[in-house]
Length: 183
Image 1 (spheres, rainbow, N blue to C red):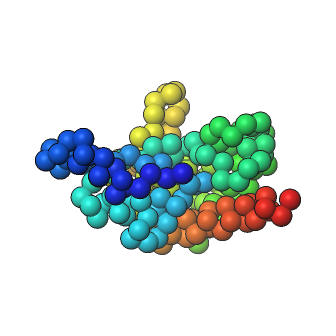
Image 2: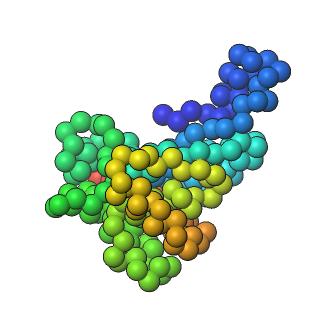
């Protein structure tokens, strides 16, 4: 369940009084399987935070909460912990589905879309999300840091590419949740 920004502001005012205006940074998850944070309207959490003057940090670009019960099994998980948005050896079916859906959405915009790894797509998605100021990527390994630095040297995703990718992920999630409901 998402936290409403208005509730955060009320809590800051109650706890800090006049100093509540010093509450200026908000951190939200932005990733392929939780696209609602950036999904195209002024009421999306990231847009709302920016409209209220917050600096927006995003986290978990490579780790998502499963959008449909049972989806974790397709990522090799047996419980509802975070899904890792990375290609593996072999890439598990649900991860391949997310990757291939994302590649298809990006194909009209990026000539190399078909060769992008899932983790690259996930990082590009977070890095170029509208109204996100900072993406907290972590530094678990040198390879991970190198990959993030490599992606920073790429041209940014266009707003259209990002919107198409968001729409594709929302459709995929809706389909997965619909399948879950029909079981």
